Amino acid sequence: MPAEKKGKFLKSGNADLARALDLEICSQSDVFVPAIAGLFYGHVTGKRIALGRTQILVPAPRFSASAQASEFISTYISEKSHLAYSCYC
Image (cartoon, rainbow, N blue to C red; front, top):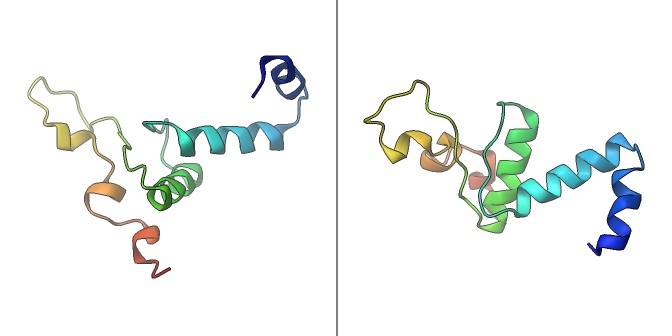
């Protein structure tokens, strides 16, 4: 988005626009790290799977100096448990 138009959208105060932009940015980014589990996380994950962007990292359940990298991969990806994987499109 051109810098001269960015202010117009950011200052609009439109909550729906803010959510739509958040969804698009999270879906298109190189890596997605969800803050909390919920509908938004599931929706973004589905879009990312469809786009082939499966870099989704989650905080480990507990901190450990010997944590394996696989503990930080979303189970939606590691176990292919998201509904998007069952689509036969």
